[in-house]
Length: 483
Length: 105
Image (tube, rainbow over all chains, first blue to last red; front, top):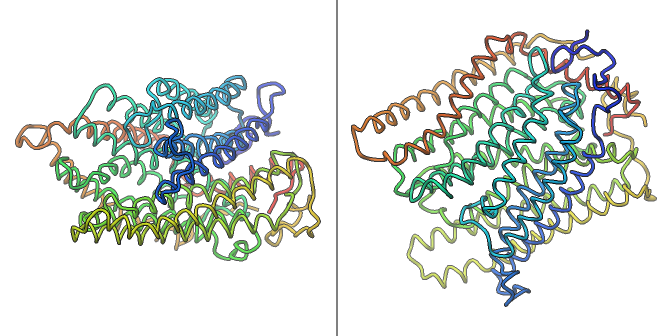
């Protein structure tokens, strides 16, 4: 018997008890990552197309199939269910078996989920472009896709919960987050896609919509993202997380305070004020919980700061954490009624959303991909290290420019609306900001194509002529870093 | 290499500080809102009875997590609370060494 992070396992060779079946289905990890990158590129291009409409230079005018509003749905749904979900699924196929020393429940089910999920995504894109979107933010997926997608999420939960549930002993924090995410995601998806569609209307349906869009971030993306960070950061830094107890405070805080946040999307609406105030309080409580996570990760980094320079994945992770703290701090203020008077319906919210979804979770995923992709492709190194530098810096600078641009745009719009300026004059004032948004977005897209090129060349086994850098390792761990 | 299961005083103080200073006041705020919710549900005021279903959604999740917390506590999930982080790293290292794979970066 030996103890693992997951508790006690019976096989000291770390193998599985399922014949010759490999612990990690590496091919699936790879496939999910490839599809995630493809959907990232597609959804970003859709966002670029949509942004051109704001500049009155939309290139596909007069074609209903490609009307800008529909591309907007492809942009948001493509990011959420194409990019983020695919990358998370690939990550889960790597992390869960390694943490539990057990493979996913079924190999056949794993492959079925992969193909079914891609079919759901293609069906969603076709449905959105042919005008079958539902009028629910983040829940625009056509009604006929919803039950299939929910079934897919249930299968994912079964596939990964099975090995986790077999673990005995205290669980590592990553597994807490993953378990909760599997259950929450199914509940949240069902709540958001079925209750407003079939059972509720009016303000109550609006409140459910608010819960859905925020819980999709907080109970699907956040627990999987934090769980992922609690796994990869200690591994890359070669040292344990600073305080496992504090990480559990973060988990249980998220569990109890997050679910009521969503109504803060509908402040100043006919929703009863006690609920609006409740949402504001719980949002501020979550920001305090977030602080525990940030403190934990930065205390873990203490003494290894040089890794920020030498390790690209570490840089992605910690840049994402700085953005995370920024966006959560912003959230604590912007959900108050005072801030909402100015920023509601403005581009401030768009800037905030981009910083959260791409600046935080996107950055964490890119860092994870930089670390893991060569391994799952069977390569010992990337095609080009310098392309990673270009990818990081162009993305980070573009992200910052877009965030500040949209934040300032939101303030300009909000104050102009408050002063009852004419709609046309607010549009004229907004146009320069929208131009900067398109330019910075172009930078972000360009950087992702650089990354995709690096992935392709690495996959093809090409090697660039640039000198190979030594991997950054901590003293005493040199032996582990040699290829 | 990763066998250091004792918490440092700084870790303990930070943990307790976050528990007491942040989570307790936040919990009290929630309790007040819960009281208001029950007041609405019992019909003392007509405001917002149509919102019971959305809020009940939250409480269903809340109760699930409460049950999970009780289960975790009674099953010793929080005993030796720092141990899993060392086990996880040691286990990862063993997996990598077994596969003969390097730790990139």
